[in-house]
Length: 305
Length: 287
Image (cartoon, rainbow over all chains, first blue to last red; front, side, top):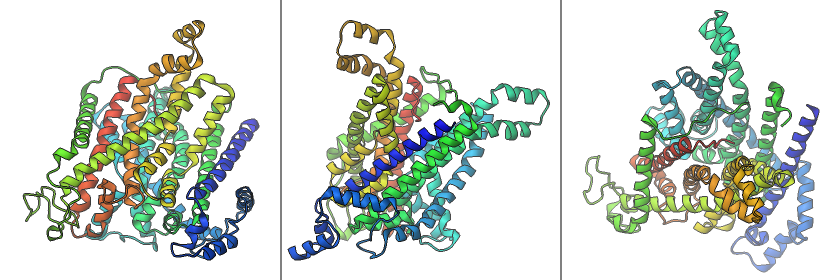
């Protein structure tokens, strides 16, 4: 077990280091940063001043190690546009994105678990097919478009929820629903597959032979075993959701990290962009590591892998 | 966790119907994309400010010359929709070609070689999965300027993971079969074995992945164009059409409903077709 944990941790650190490098390369793609920062009307002197002020006159290798060294200590430099520490900006916006991600995950689980169980119990009937059809529809739904449609229907016509902005918990409901849509297909299919497998196993036959009630067999015995991979995938899906929240936050003007990144991309604010890419990637790496360890703890057969 | 049994073979009943529905939708979209120039009733770029936001045929006061109405600049919506199918399919297919080349090469080499090389391929897949695709694609296009070529290359470089996963696992399955050993005994080069013996035998699985990737690429392009960092205007991408019409959606909801439904139906069609192929070939596509 200890060897497994150690191996998993080393991989996670290596992945994070690679992403760190990629995030740095990403922002150097556009050529001369100083020219972009100084703006279109800048003179050569302005550009030179900017280059010196931001340390862009140093060799790229030095810039890279300087950035890595600071990033490891949680210092991502200063935002060119907001004139604030990038770490502080991200820290300020992160609660919004995490709330959105968790809302989406809770809604997704609330939809997927019952649907997956229903489909498994009624395997190969119309109910099963209906559930699979819903999963297919969810997979094809463009999330930003669903967001706009919800704004028109739930927001404008029915007036149930606020259309956009960040304020009360109600602002998270519509974006949460939209975000949940992206995770529902995978979670439903996994719940269904896990339940079908669990229901066909020996311990369920034993439970039936003991004369346990149907509900007790389903919820206590089958679902508990089917839930292990679902919980693990849910953690991975949360990572995907946080990464994909940029689209939804922009649609709903929800001022989270994704919205911050979108604003910063439009303003060529490189330090913010590379920091957000890095932070979201590291969160994803941590969540997948958590999922793998959880799987290994709950299912000893996976530890050798 | 033991693998679920995957039954392959000809499709029956509703699965077969669903696959056919998917095939018809995809066929129609491809037809529109190929012959857009002949199919459009109007020039999709022609503005006419006297005919702004005309309503589509199912609403009152529509203009028979414009079946789906016109947009905020008076451009014919049906023509832009047909032209948009061309953009979506073009991007879906080209992105998938780029990602297929990268992913299949990595997967086949990793799966065949095993050992350290395979570890490196697995590491690359893990790293790729941890990168937030939409954010990075937006950043690249935003920092380097939007153009079709850049968009295709960026998405292609980001979406190869599923190709690599499936190519790797299927290569491992066929690697030890007799015909591969026979080719090796006959003195075939490593490249020959990979390209002529292994690749044709895993191709059916890769076709399934390709359909899923085309659908994903089309959705991503629409999302990027919607955020203003995808296809450059005035090209009529469906995502861009939704973005441009957004201001008017509360008063004329059909301006976003039409391109959105088109996008949804096309992606659904591709997924239906892909699911049918997956069941026929017995491919597992989940990582």
